[in-house]
Length: 258
Picture 1 (cartoon, one colour):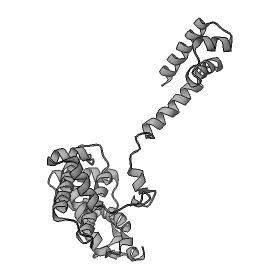
Picture 2 (picture 1 turned 180 degrees about the vertical axis):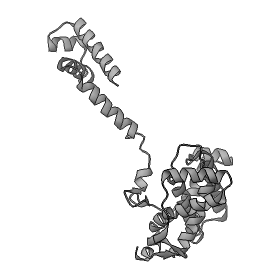
Picture 3 (picture 1 turned 90 degrees about the horizontal axis):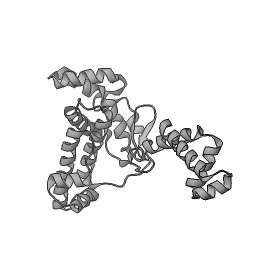
Picture 4 (picture 1 turned 135 degrees about the horizontal axis):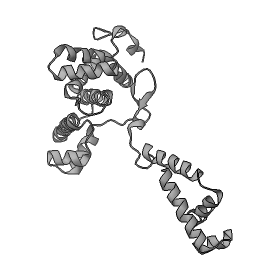
């Protein structure tokens, strides 16, 4: 990455780029939406570090960093002009994909690998539809949503995108602000091991810890070992009616604690 360590890139002195606080960014977006060109320019200048962070991930491609920086700035400007200030989304989560998308389009246009004209046309329509959707909803659309927008088959959307997308490592960095780096794998959704699921497990464990030892034993035998209430009654040495009452009470405690 030696070529990207220089202070000046495309005539911009990167050592003097401003750093905006969240409050400043929010205020500038509101002013820009009200028609202030000065606020818009401050937003562009204040987010150029995002472009620098993004183009570093493309350094291995052997492309001129000045060219990539200029292309990335185009994506940044598109993102700033289309960002929806009414949604509770931090701008960088929207701007970074816009910058990456613009650079990838540039690289595809200059790629030695040729894709059929019809497939390329479909791909461009898909990308335009994605941008329009992101501008309105601040999130990427699903394949089905794109297919519906363009009135084409889902398979056509998949084939078009596959034909123009380069393989990407899950460990490839997407964005870094000088602290923790965000990699591709950090943005891939895991429907099973989600934060919500993880937090639910922690809450359930804490709720279980508040039960008495006998209540824990009853639930363990009933729901982890699959014993009937009669079998649990014989194991613990109390009546089935007591087992039923204790089991219901334990479950109600867990619900209350959750």
